[in-house]
Length: 124
Length: 85
Image 1 (cartoon, rainbow over the protein chains, first blue to last red):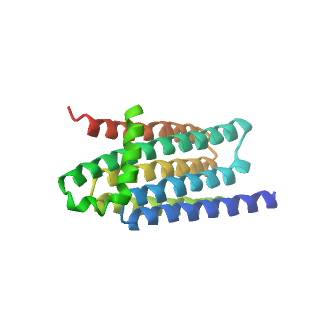
Image 2 (tube, rainbow over the protein chains, first blue to last red):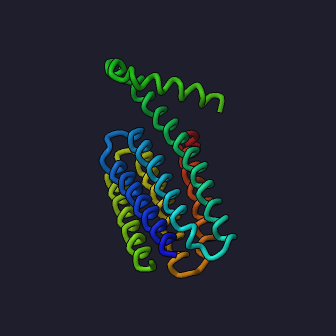
Image 3 (cartoon, rainbow over the protein chains, first blue to last red):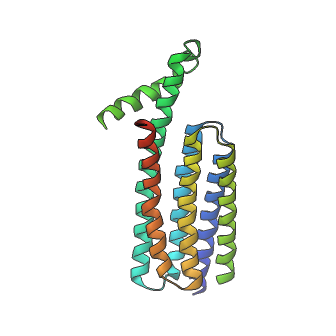
């Protein structure tokens, strides 16, 4: 019992650390894409660690299975919504870059991302 | 154990407050929707922890519904911005 409680404490504390890292990244990173990177990866990992830590404390096996189901669902939904937000943000970025042609040279790094995202978007 | 999990829940609510700062600051609407993504994951974990603390397994169902509905808001946002008509 003591070992199980220690496992819960360690896993929940590390999940909380990743949640704090993700939200501080959301607050301090300069760009939409950087914020997206910080948020989707760190938060899904934090939720996974909290679910893993809480799993031995669950009342029944059915509850534990439901917790794992929630975790999988959040991971799939997080990946999908990350892709959607990134494609929308890169579209609006390319619209701005067409208007200002001298800034297009600075955005040459990001235009590669735009073109690849745009081509996959057309298939979508 | 219960006290420790309660402290963790309180700190997760602090994470939600940090996300509210991005809602206030965010220059583009996509940034504000990212904060809603943070609210969904942190809210799901808060509900899971509350289900364990209060020993009510119904709250796990509430967390499942929140995890199901959170991406729908983002999909609606993206589709409305693509076709404004």
